[in-house]
Length: 392
Image (cartoon, rainbow, N blue to C red):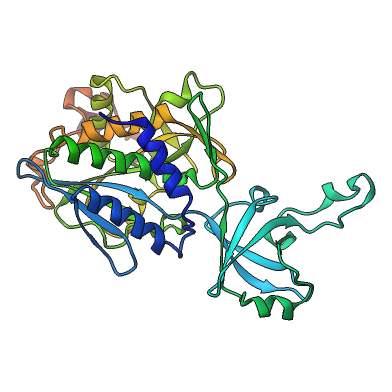
């Protein structure tokens, strides 16, 4: 069965590996090792996106599950005369969430510890003036935990402009099921996906159709999918982190099914199919429009892939800050994904090209709005009887 303790253990492994977007080789090696342990065939693109294949028990259109392993982070952009570093964000996140974060500068020589701090005059009585410091990356500095007090001191350490900066996760797993830390997005989703793969492999269960599992490395900067989706894939389901509203009932047990996001709506039929699967399996689910969200599913469409897309998200809080999720939600994500890949495809005969008479319908004709009206053409000199129109 799906094992929540194994999901948590895998998540802690993933969180221990720095993987800001652009510096993901080590986490890709880890995932490759986990797939090999399960006997799962996989291959990799030049830059490191992994494409694993779970053979299906019958022919038909292939599916894809997608999760990203890259995280937000920063890059050294300048070294000041006083030995402090200026950084640029990797990914879109606010410097407000960076203040006070413990970090590691990953130079070519060796890693160095540091901390993000606002640029204030420390030691002022009653912290006078702290509230007036503007918000923004121009007003944030990286303090190295080394005896450096000049640009030359930093240079002697081997730290250069362009070095990556990774955020410490500081994860906590509480007895009540909550999991906290930085970089849960989207390592928690990846842990759930790896557990599904493990369970299918150990139980000898095959997906209904060929299923590709993609581990992408540039979702944080919006690139994501690129060319990783093969032409035979007709359905693509992305797994990701989505913040829930504080007032929602039992939010941390649910799976969020996205109807649409900042990029637009997701596929009507695939989303409905996932909703039906969740209801039949008694998986708590909520359907939401994620107005500020962007995912690998959207990136796949922008890249020109002709696929039906959907997004399922585990319950999260405080995205890009000290994030939080719950093992119940991760369990339910894993349950939903396994139920999906072992279900019948949304359309068994889905093909890249078809004819209009074979195209699916979203509504029956008798469900369409009925309206009628008569155009007043008297002022135009026309014959009202000949020019009247009725919309059936």
